[in-house]
Length: 408
Image 1 (tube, rainbow, N blue to C red):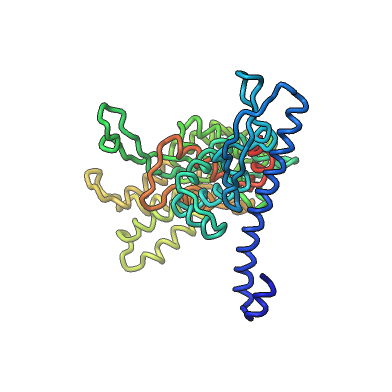
Image 2: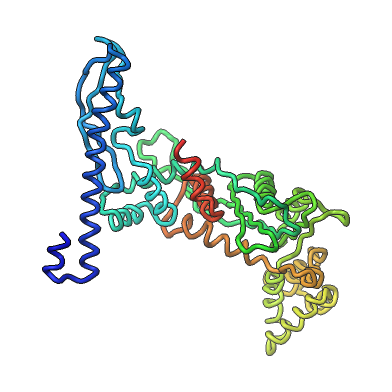
């Protein structure tokens, strides 16, 4: 093949394409040859260890690999005339008919964790030259996504002095299939949106976050939040710096999991940019000709912990309660109800962030890029296990899963 490529004067790209094609054929030949010899050896040794094993029948055995489909004739044995059927090669090689090899499973899950199952099947054809159904990619991806729940992110050996942590929700498209008497379950399906809660945490001294996610209750989300923060280095003497949009369920869960009060080594800080969004809407009413300047002035006061001064600016122009569109009143209520979580001066002096951008961006690259693709709807169980898959990849535990868990 090389000599022919030289004679034809092909380009480096054409030579590489030919080499890939030949390597695929060679890989298939090597695996087929190995399987035939291994089948013969396994059968011979099985009969030597048990003389009562006799030939039963030969059947075609095939499985999928990254080099294409591997097929051999497998000699099956039987214990006596009516005894149990024995398959020495399958037991030794740990392979079943129509199964996918572990390297191929890894490739399929790799593609299926990022793209739709249909597109993942196309990528398999593009990169491995093998044709597989989208249903096969789906089955392998969901199977491993389920078992990835056993992977726990390994916490650092030394607890962190300070951890940054947050939790927020993201709505996912869920479908419930029909359970009624109709034969067409599609007519009875229900489509709705359900919240998935994402947690993230990292030591102040590191860059990468540790993620956790669940579609369970608020209480379960709190436990996941605690576990995620512990995996990031939370210890008995660690200071926990919480960040979020100030939703009651998030603030309450933070205090339940990390403590509250003056003696607590945990403090929640309201996301500065959420406050700024409320003030920006109020600025349109209060300073229509100088909204940017007005907003910057109020932000400067907040950074100096002059929350009451900002509230006093809002109070005289608050809309009456009966008005539906009330940006000034909304900003005042949002800030006054959460004024205890706006110690921006203290956070900045300690070198701590005042924005929850990490958890916001986490929603996009951990959850939404895969689970909120156009036209995608998930059953509740599948959405939950896909969250496990996505967080395992985001936590850089992908390699550990395949080396320690997938082979069991």
